[in-house]
Image (tube, rainbow, N blue to C red; front, side, top):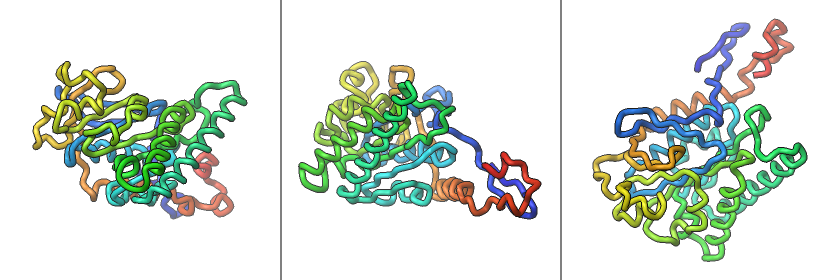
Length: 291
């Protein structure tokens, strides 16, 4: 990351990350780095307050905002968990269930249009070379929208729309990352929704059943039980991803200032008005102007 100076003006240069690249999420219990590829996947995280869900979400969001091929759609039941990313998001939805439902319907239209494009080209999924943006929909406080506010009908509509996007979106570049507190009941994470998330992350839970509610039935009895994580081990959780077996890992904590610095840089690199007009500096390489 940095700048280049062209005709006396500073032009921001991004780091060139892609959502097709592996995302660094932390280190496992042996100190080895943990990377996941989220493209073509979806991720669900659950756990008690303070268990480290936010650190995982921030790791993913910071990667996403520095990517050149990402459109970010955020749903935040508390305003402040994802609020720092609002300036670089295509859409930010706060604690408003009606707005969340409208936004999910718009995402559903994006999914439909992309599958029409894929069908017209005789394809089954998008590729990095297509040049299409990967839409990353992040839902923090999933339970707020699915089980807390609004009528039962609205909650069910939200869950149905989200389930459709999780089920159909990944092949066309619309992926979902969702997090919730206190995963202690089927009403919080309906099984029909939970079971279609390819990747799961369980932070500290109060019971083995709550751990299984996130990771899937039976993992606690095999020794992968998030209720055994000590309360002081914030950021530690079990990640069920590419290996097919949960991995105990710790996601690094980022301060508000560090997140702000990443977001400010990401916003700066996206400001097209900082790039000189080609008519003003004809000696600039076309590739730089196009960037």
